[in-house]
Length: 255
Image (cartoon, rainbow, N blue to C red; front, side):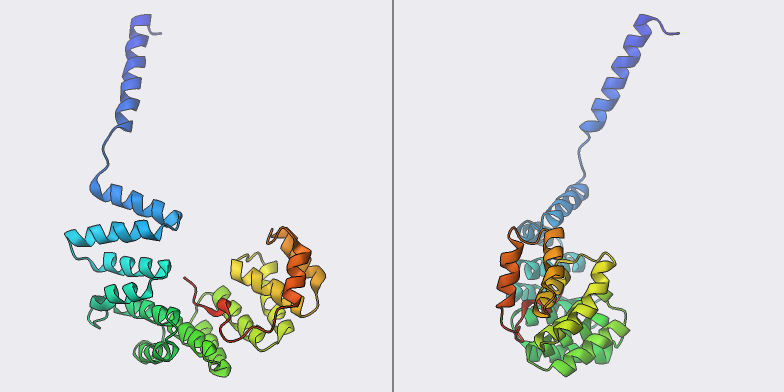
C-alpha cells in the first residue's frame, strides 16, 4: 500500500510526535499539584509544609493556609498548626467551620481537653449538624474520664452521620476502657467480618478478643492480617496488659 520511502516518513513522523509529547513542560500549577499528590501519597508532611509555605509567600490563599495548618497537625506540630489557623477563625471566613474543627483536634493533641470541650460546645451551638464536633467532644470527655458524656457525644456524632467505622471504634474503645471486652467485640467483629480492616479497629478487636478469653480467634486474625511475626507472643503480651486507662491511644481523633 505504501512504498518504502512513504513508510519511512510515516515512521519518523510518529517518533517525533511521540517524542514531542514527552518533553512538553508542566505549568506551575500542574507542577505544584504533582508534588502535592506525591507528598500526600508518601505522608511526607515536611514536603507538604514547604510546598504550602512557598505558595503563601507569593499569595495569601485560605485553602492553602488550611492545608498548611493540617500538614503541621499531621506532623504532630500542633502549636504551629494553631498559629497558622488564626486568620481562618473569623466567623465570616468560608473556612471557619473546618478551621475550628482542626483547632479542636490540635487542642486534643496538646492534651488541652477542657478547652477542646468548650470549643466543641461552641461549634455545636452554632452548627448542630457537624458530626465531627460531637465526636471530638466525646474524645476529650473520654480522656478526662467522663465516659457517660463521651458515649452520648459519640452516639450524637453517629446520629449526625459521622463515618460508622469512626463511631463504632470509639464506642468500642469506651467499652475496653471500662473492661467490657465482650461488648467491644460485639461492636467490632461485625465490622471486621464485613471487610472493614481499618488498623485501629483491627487492633482493638484483637485486644478485646484476647481480654475476653477468645485467644484462638485473636490468633487467627493476627495471622490473617500479618499483625505480628510471633502471634502467640503477642497474645501473651496482650493477656498481661492492664486495663486501658483514659489515655488509651485508640480514642485519639482520626486524621
